[in-house]
Image (cartoon, rainbow, N blue to C red):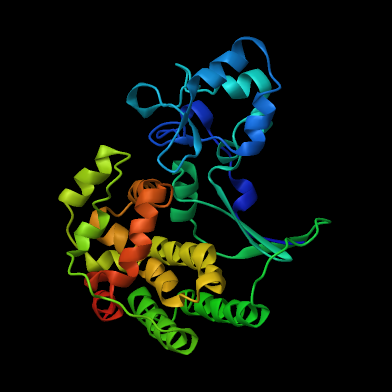
Length: 319
C-alpha cells in the first residue's frame, strides 16, 4: 500500500499533560467494538471501572460517561490517562489511539494527516514556513477493498494536484488563488453532478453557532467577530487551504460533491479573518466542528443550503 502524509507528519508528538486543551476533555469518548471485546477479557478493578462507566449516545454507540467539566472519566488529576497507564496506549479506544490523526483509504493508497483540533498540530501547521508538501512510502499492507469509481478517482487526483498548484502559486495574492480555486471547482462540479445551493437564508456568523458547544471560548469568538480581509493574504491561510484540500477533496469520489470540499478550504481561510488571526482560533473551530458528528453534519448541509456559503457569496470575500 502507498502511504501519503504531509512532510511534517512524523514530527508530531503529543505533549500529554502539558497540553493547553486536552483531547480528553470536552467531547464524548467513543468505544469501538474491538476495544470493547478486549475490555471484556480484563478482570478486577479496571474491568469493573470500565463497565461501570459505559453508556450509549443518541445513535446507540458505546461511549464512556463523562465526568465533571466534560472530562473523560479516565483522565486523572495530572491530566494523564489511567487506562493508558494501566494497560498501555495500544488498548485505549481507537479514537484515543489515533487522535489527532485522520486516515483516508482509497484502495491501494492510504492518506494520513493530523488535525487542527489538536493545539500542537495546529501550531505546527499554522507556523509552517515551507510549502505544505507530502511524503510517500510503500509498505506491505494489501489494498483496502472498496467500490470506488476508478476513473473518477484518478480524475479527482489530477484535479487536486492542480488545486495544490493554485494554492501554492506565490506569484499572486492568496485571495486571488482562492477565488480561482472556487471558480475551477464550480466548473468541475458542473461536469460531475447537479448542485443546488443557497436556498436557506442565514447570516455568515450563524454558520458557526453550533448546536453542540464544546468550548465556551468559541462562542465568545463568534459573538465578537469582525472581518479583516488583510488576514487572508498570509502564509498560515495558505497552509489552512492546503490542509482542507488534502483532507477532504478526494472524498468527492464517494459523493461527487467537489464544490463543497473546495468551499471548506475557502471557509477555512476565512476563519482567522473573522474570528482570530492565530493557531488557537482554527484549533477551536476544528475541535468544535470536525470532531462533533452533530456539528459536522450540520456544516456539510449548510455548505450546500446556506445562501451565505453559496459560490456567489463566498467568492465576494476573495475579490
